[in-house]
Every structure is written in structure tokens, then in C-alpha cells.
View (tube, rainbow, N blue to C red):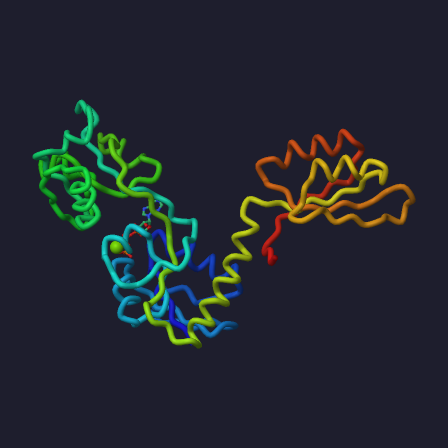
Amino acid sequence: MIRIALQSKGRLNEESLELLAEVGIDIERGKRRLLARAELFPIEALYLRDDDIPHAVERGVADLGIVGLNEYEERRCGATVVHKLGFGRCRLSLAIPKGEEYEGIGYFNGKRIATSYPVILRKFLEEKNIKAEIEEIAGSVEIAPAVGMAEAIFDIVSSGGTLVSNGLKEVETAMHSEAVLIATPRLEPEKQALLNQLLFRIEAVERTRGKKYILMNIPTERLAEATGILPGIKSPTILPLAERGWSSLHAVVDERVLWEKIEQLKAIGAEDILVLTPEKMIL
Ligand code: ATP
Ligand code: MG
């Protein structure tokens, strides 16, 4: 049995549970229950505030955890990042009132900066040789300049909409973040084996991101042209059809070029084109 710490509510909760569901692990949603077992895999979820996840994993209270890289870096903990998960993408940035003139990082010398991420901010300012005062606050950071608590803020930004609606502009980015899978430093062999199984499944799901599976019928004499248009993972699958002179061609295509490929294939006589979304891909 392995235990994974997940955010009990908030931005990473849903997507963490969705990812687990995609790899065949259905866990009861953490509404009331703080510890919940999965059905078909020996794993249980411990639901925590995201602030507490790095430390819980470091101490082995949980073997694994899913948390934002920003939170992991802020806690400076001994857990290790084993996999980047690609969701919960955001950045940690410095922002100032939008009417202020900004000519470079030197702007922050002697300023007060409000943040919930003092560790990351301190390191960033030291690297840039800036001497500023850090005002640590737990939330509502964006309001700090308007109420005279600070001249600038250092906070999470994704679209930037929150900054704009608080009359602020982003001027420097200190780090990019996404959800990461972290593990306790010394996993027992049995738990390491479960982690490996989990990673194998996660990678199978990740390989299908942005990919489509395409099937079509095509005159056999045009196959060479079609395979030129559609390089598969190794090579496309070709099956003969009952109707003479026709073949069925299957391939995996990058979603970004899907329509372009379909037009090219139609132009050389492809018919009955079917596009499907693959779920898992194991090499
Ligand atoms: P908790 O109650 O668990 O302490 P919280 O309020 O501290 O939660 P959330 O706002 O739920 O935290 O954010 C959790 C994590 O999600 C952040 O640490 C960050 O990695 C990521 N995140 C936050 N805001 C965004 C956003 N706007 N877009 C994408 N990811 C975000
Ligand atoms: Mg938190």
C-alpha cells in the first residue's frame, strides 16, 4: 500500500483526481473523508492543504504527493520531484501599479514587496542583487499596493486577469510552475515498485496528449503517397479491404496538423476518414 497526499480542495484537487482516474485509480473525492482508499490499486489518498503536502511527504507521512512546483520550492523540503505533470501551470511574478514607470529590476531597490512566497522571492532578489523589504502575507496579496501595505507584489499569475483587475502590471517573472509528483526520500522497495507502476501508467496517458488516431480507406495504388503524408509512431498500419484495390490505413497524428493532413489525404483519394481520441499509448 502506498499513500499519496493530494490537495483537499482548490486548484489542483480536480486535476489530480482526474489524472489518477485516467490511470485506473478511482479515489473517493475528499469532501469529508481525509483518508480514502482506491478500489483497484493499493493506494490511499491523504487530503491536505497544499501548504502541508511537501512537509508531509518529506517526513514520510505520505509516500507521494501532488503539489505545485512553487509550493515545493517555497517549502525547501527534502522530498524529491519524480515527475512533472503538466497541469496547474502558472508563474511567479513581480507586479507593480500599472501607472508606474518601469525601467528594470533596479526599480525594486528599497521597495516593500508583499508575497506569500518569501523564500522564492528572497532567493530571486539575492540573485539579482536587489535589496527590498519582503512583507509576508498569506492571501489577498494583489490588494497590498492599493491599501499601502507594499509598493509591489510577488504572486502567482496565470492569465494575468487578476493583476489587471487590481490595477497592476507584471514586470518580472521569477519562476514557472506546474503540478509535480513528489516522493519521500527513502521509499521501501515495495513502494518504489508501486511508484514505478504508477509512472508507467501516467506516461502511457501523457503520450496521447495532443494526439489523434486516424483511420481511412484509400486506393491501394495511392498508399505510398499516403504514408508519406502520415508518418506514424513507427510506420502506419495498412490492412487490405474486402473490396479489391482498396486498403485501410491507420496512424497516430499530431492534433495541430490534423486538418492539414486530412485535406492532403482527401486530395489523393482517401475516403471514410474516421478520427478518434486515443486514451493510452504503451510503447
Ligand atoms: P490550500 O487551501 O490547499 O492551501 P491554496 O489556496 O493555497 O490552497 P490554490 O489557489 O488552490 O492554493 O492553488 C494551488 C496551486 O495551484 C498553486 O500553488 C499553484 O501551483 C497552482 N495555481 C494557483 N493559481 C493558479 C492559476 N491561476 N492557474 C493555474 N495554476 C494555479
Ligand atoms: Mg495553500
